[in-house]
Amino acid sequence: MSGGQKVLLYILSFFIPVVGIILGIVWMNDQDLEKKQIGKNCLVIGIISIVLSCICWFALSALSIAPAFMVGY
Image (cartoon, rainbow, N blue to C red; front, top):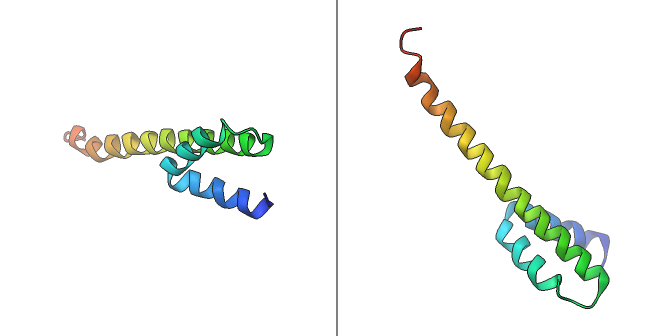
């Protein structure tokens, strides 16, 4: 697999985490060691993307309700 294809799969895994997770699960069981490594990387990138999305969502939610607690200031 070429370097460009790997980068494309990693970008897809970051922006569409479900793709990365599915690719990771399918390709981690493959006999080809290169595909196995790419699958593992896609899985990790997909999980990291979901975790970062949750952190950002919670942070933005907290910042949006913060002015309600600063009534007296």
